[in-house]
Image 1 (cartoon, one colour):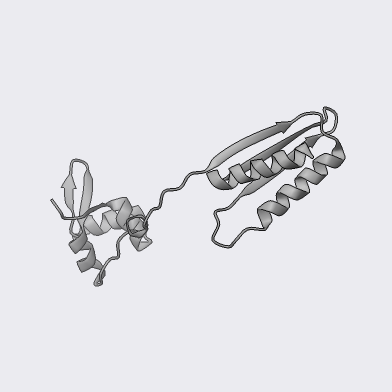
Image 2 (cartoon, helix red, strand yellow; image 1 turned 90 degrees about the horizontal axis):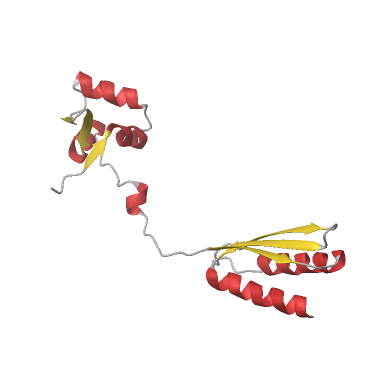
Amino acid sequence: MTERLYSVEQVAERLGLHVRTIRNYVRDGRLNAVRIGKQYRIAHEDLEAFTGRPVPAPVREAVERRRHSEVSSIVQIEAISPEMADRVTSLLMGAAANRSAGDDPLRIQTVYDAERARMKVIVLGGLADTARLFDYLEGVLAS
């Protein structure tokens, strides 16, 4: 079966109308539909006949997907001074900001707890970018 069938909700979303409006069109006979169980299904061809123009494929069918992976990491650094925490924050933010336009986003957030002399670095980004950032962080902390 190669015929594309749409639910009332899908048709309403495509046409920018309320679901009840589409159901009324079906009940009034203005839009052909098939009842399957308790739900209506509208054929692609019937939808095109109703609108009087070709109906494009849904966005999620038209978008080509590419494989993507992302890392979420929290790094906790103990016994760090406020000055070093500021330095680490500045360097990491600078590294995240100086990226090419086509690169995947790299999001960094830092939190410093002065009472405990503890810093947390939260990183969200691609695998390779995050690994490079951690190498950079390790070098900064070792110096």
